[in-house]
Picture 1 (cartoon, protein in one colour):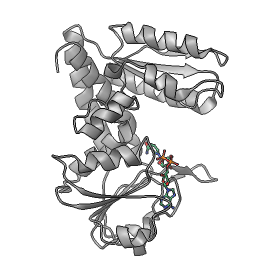
Picture 2 (cartoon, helix red, strand yellow):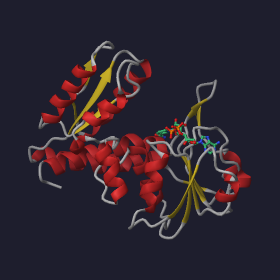
Picture 3 (cartoon, rainbow, N blue to C red):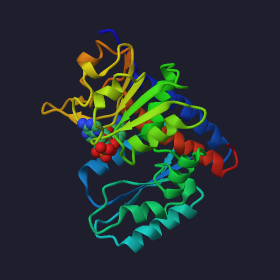
Picture 4 (spheres, rainbow, N blue to C red):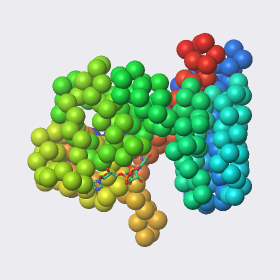
Length: 287
Ligand code: NAD
């Protein structure tokens, strides 16, 4: 293997130490950060994800204000809960765990979150601020990707970066962030209708793959020495995890690469914690 492994697990651990120190300083000033995860119904994976987020919060000194609502809760009642959390000074960040039961409108719920507390970065105000070049809250996974690239000392100014995938949660905000003044990458946003994906990826200095498709990036698509970030997560029959990148063969060509697991994944919850601590600092005038 020629590529350097970009170790997201180690970076996430270091970042969580820093976040815990910040949370501790805020607590001393009466501004303990708090995260409210709103969970509706009995969806098994959602309970697992929220449980993992709340355990991560506890480890860095963020208080969880978990709100559990029954599966048959009305949209009005859900909005009332979001309003209550929005008005609670102990709650710095609010997330609505998706998917919601079919009778509920997730977009309306996301729009009900106080934009100051929108740590998932999905409120139209957050998305608008990102587009304006003045981000307030940015989704955690794109932030994690940028932090990994920074940690790997990849010079993004003027670099050719290809992002594969244009989802609201990952690809689109990431492509926007990379192109902002101050980061200054030249970004190509690719998707399922891109005519010749390999022609784009072959000239890229950095390829970020967030396609949700196994083997979306193979060795013949990568310029020797390029940096490859794999956002994808898939579970094999034996329970092991793998990504969107054909890791073994791409690692023979790339200069640096994130593994799955242990790359982007650990950074996602870490960036949610970071956003929550930053929100607490800002809301208490301590930013
Ligand atoms: P999504 O399905 O919402 O979006 C995928 C995007 O990729 C779409 O825009 C689609 O046009 C594009 N695409 C799909 N196949 C393609 C192909 N073969 N070539 C080019 N473009 C293609 O998915 P998402 O929510 O953005 O997530 C993407 C992947 O990242 C999934 O595997 C998901 O599980 C994973 N994910 C990981 C984390 C993490 O923390 N590591 C966080 C979020 C998502």
